[in-house]
Image (cartoon, rainbow, N blue to C red):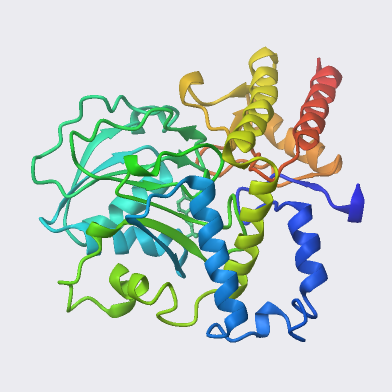
Length: 361
Ligand SMILES: *Cc1c(COP(=O)(O)O)cnc(C)c1O
């Protein structure tokens, strides 16, 4: 393979498009005649402001973000948002959370430090291997929002239908599925995610938030923790993650060049189907997630035993496939097949697993 790169199935930080890495390489010593790299550039310079504005404009175009939503680039990853969300959005001090795995549990734990959390549905009874029915949730009238982790990176489940929030605003963690499919932003009050799973380098979260949810009555909240500070300053309240914004901007342009999110979704669907169809027909491997709720991005799978799982991990590693060991809470294996994973990578993995099965069979 070009540059001796391997097929990297890491859950995050994760694989990026080679086209983007090549462009970054070409610009690293001298960005477009500036005589410096974007790493060395003032965030107040004309050149960088243009990079940031273009990144936002391209993201708006890709996702069709309505004008009454702000796009914010904030540091602290997705994890800081676990706290910022309740701090900023809990007006009545009460919110509804859907518990579908490790990441929603972490969000719940942080929200409980701020106010009352009502877990209206959970899939804990079956180790988070499915998405609970959210069509008729018990939502108190005065709940401030309904929260979901739309794609659970560790457990490999995804919401194919959004919860019926009964008029309440929906807040979604899209970290591991950002830009993997079409998304109707108007269905949400806020969408956010860390970018290091499906977009760019670590160290940046993107927040898409409806303007009327940005409050100016939170005077005692530290400024950095208020969405208003970031919104008023066009995400330059302090020095932003310039490098992250620059590389993400390139990924947005790359996605536009291949036909946008509809085309990306089609590719992702084909890749995921290839892998799931193999798992469903295999005699030794099986998917751990209910068929209707399977993620297109993170595919956990197991054999009949821990010992055999470990053998498969070693076998795939020897064949040049990295980061296939499953998260310790699920065990087995996990293939993260994000946007940047080429179809050939998934096909090669399936061939490798077939070889293993044939040798064992
Ligand atoms: C990785 C991940 C996070 C945490 O992201 P950080 O940027 O490391 O804070 C949160 N939610 C989901 C769904 C994730 O996959």
